[in-house]
Length: 68
Image (cartoon, rainbow, N blue to C red; front, side, top):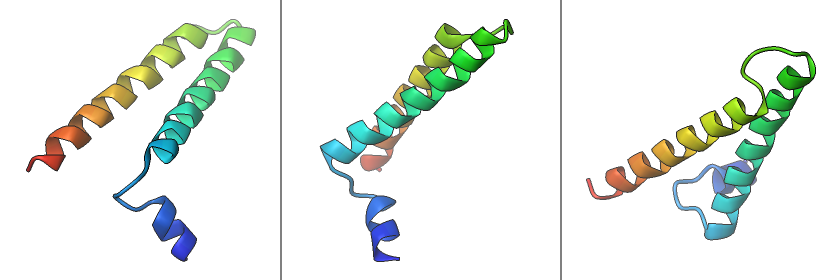
């Protein structure tokens, strides 16, 4: 349980932050690639942009909450 507490704690390092952002982008790209292969709307670019927007919004909110 200590490993989970350390991973999901509020204080994270730069490496862990970059790892989380990278994994989120990778999973968004995989979803988009799957949709693009099946000729569905909202392919790779759409999912990558969506992940990027959500990440930047989350980082902005976290930065604002740090000042409260």
